[in-house]
Amino acid sequence: MNKVIRCTRAGALVAAAALSFSLAASADETCNSPYISNLIKGQESYVHVWTLGVTGLGDASDKLVTVDADPKSARYGKVIDSVSVGGQGEAHHMGFSDDRRYLWAGNLDDSKIFVFDVGTNPAHPHLIKTIKDLPQKTALIGPHTFYALPGRMLIGTLSNTKDKGGVTGMALYNNKGDLIRKYDLPVTQIGGVKGDGYGYDLAVNPAKNVMLSSSFTGWNNYMRDLGEVVNDPAAMKNFGNTMVVWNLKSMKPTQILSVPGAPLEIRWGLAPGQNWAVTATALTSQIYLIKQDAAGAWVAKDVAKIGDPSKIPLPVDISITADGKGLWVNTFMDGTTHYFDMTNPEAPKETYQKKTGSQVNMVSQSWDGRRVYLTSSLLSRWDKKGVDNEQFLRAFNWDGHELTQAFQIDFAAEKLGRPHHMKFSAAR
Image (cartoon, rainbow, N blue to C red; front, side, top):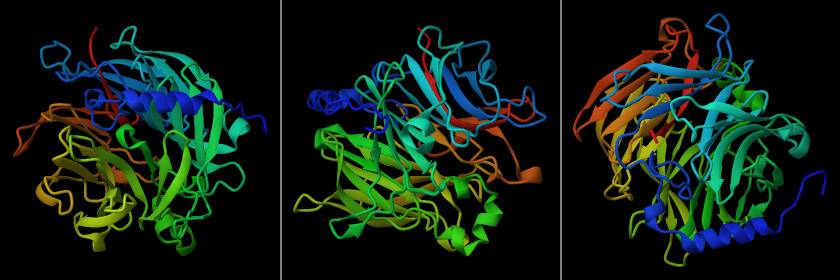
């Protein structure tokens, strides 16, 4: 077992949960796992921001920053708490546990995982556990996506200890933070397409018993200056070009889909009659639709361009509306936020765009779609330099026609660091 604990109950738990799934369990922010409870369908109270430490700013540590997001609060739009974890490990993504009481957050460089209690007092989270041995127990590094399963946390990683390349896997933990087992991303041929073994995002459709995974690049690239990577032909070959279809109950890959250009975030349309997913490719600036064909096989089809692909706008984060009829897309290089009408997912139409910063990365929206939050940082060595190195959280109101800024926080001026991923919570 190579020091990896195996659990035969994991598949049974996932299967049972899949059978009990209903659309009422769809998560707010529209990118959370559908197994997360305690939905916020009204006004979110707080935005938690996982933030990279910067030498010379404050304590220089990675930290979880909490911002008051309630317009009725006297502290609206202000930082009300900050929990430092010590050191700089390339803070990146987070994910709630299925009961929404705990927020798991990871570092892409040192591969540490931090578990915060956000349920006891959402305004003031506290760190309860640090997991330091992911590389030693799994040979995986770069914990990226934290995806809640019933009583479990599935973590998609970006790299490996052997050569720090893109071939990687997933690690399954219980909610107490104990490792259960790991799963390798496929490098063999399945259904006529060869796997590249690369990982990035995870997304589940329980009604179809399907999980999708996407692909990016390894430590050797993401911890290197972006300019160097772009100008290195060998490095540019080391990006993922596939998505994998998994049987959710057995956790075994059933198909590999060709999706050239580093497909990143995956968002399912889960409203009645949908059961399709979309992703955006970072290097080729395309929206891909993943759906079943008449025979029941999953297929990936490029259905729309994002900006001018020849200028490599670098699509990064996406956020789908709760009804699946709209999609926000951020492009990092030109600092633009785009909105696509997804009424016909076979032919998305861009209906709005706004330059929201000199660089812009993550996007999260409220369940009702009326509020949109943006952060600026991509990776510490990929962010822009000089005056273009803006580091912000910006909140907007959306009336269906125009984004109107509600507040902003300059993380550099506040000496907090580089803001990356966001999650919402509500006062109890």
